[in-house]
Length: 428
Image 1 (cartoon, one colour):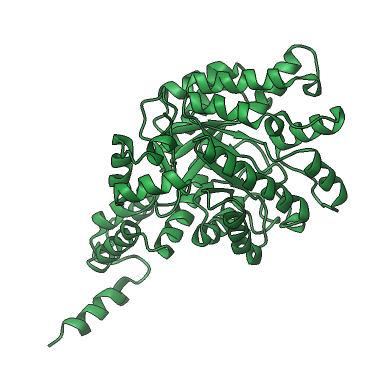
Image 2 (image 1 turned 120 degrees about the vertical axis):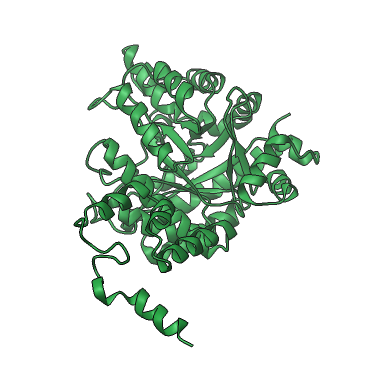
């Protein structure tokens, strides 16, 4: 039985019990939410990791993308990015590699990564076609399903698959006046395959076949947002919403087949449209967990896109998004460096934590109260240890001249507001 099937039968498994304890929730709340699809436990049966729990009322989770490309294909660097991302709090990793021995890269990641790992099998479909001297447009449904099966059997925990792109949504895409077109790599592969071959998307047409493969190893399905907006101009347009309607239907079918499923979302969205996007998704997709890529709330921030994404991510998660894909400062410019990965993870964690507070998560509120008390007590060591990035905070503190009074910060000095405030509060 899959985890969804177990939850529907009323079974509270050891995995559910442990996940509930980590989240400070009742095991029955988790079981019930998994049974109705508003929560998903993500873990391939073959892996020995703590499952990733997605969905309210658990805390908002963070994903970090890594992976090789033709510009840089050093597996050692990608493994180090994975370690840095996990060290700084990433809850999941996606391997988006498009160059090198992809099976070997996954093998190394699965061996060393202690958190859930996701992939996009369409990338490997394109690479294998190229290696065989053919176009990805010449590949068959069987070619694609063979790769999906391999990823599942190798141990991958969740797959992003663009099942909502079909003949109808491709026709709609040609009608809308998009500034940036379609910007999903996997989405455009399947879109062009549909258009050039005038055939239905195998992932849509043979969706039950896909679900059977996923169920075998209890692999979760991330329904990819192939027509996600890549520019603010294109946000919340007809083709984005039409694909979302299709995804909503597929969510219900996945639930009926007892496969864990969550839905990927935008992209680039103006700040004033972020909440509406989440509400529309939750309504159309039967409250399945929602995974957003940022969203970036401005297009003018290359070099600082992690900040734009953190703003959008905080608003999205406050409105109900459950899983934030980080964005690094290198987005739109180059592959991220190890330092870019660190900054991207921290920015997304800040967004997720801010949203957790707004959602009334007790552990998030307790964390803020604890660090506030440490600040008021001028307990520098405890305050530094509670920071979201203790290493960076300590480096700033250590930069003070050695003669500085440790009882206050360098900004206030003798005018320390905390000490003056305390003197008034404590005076009888």
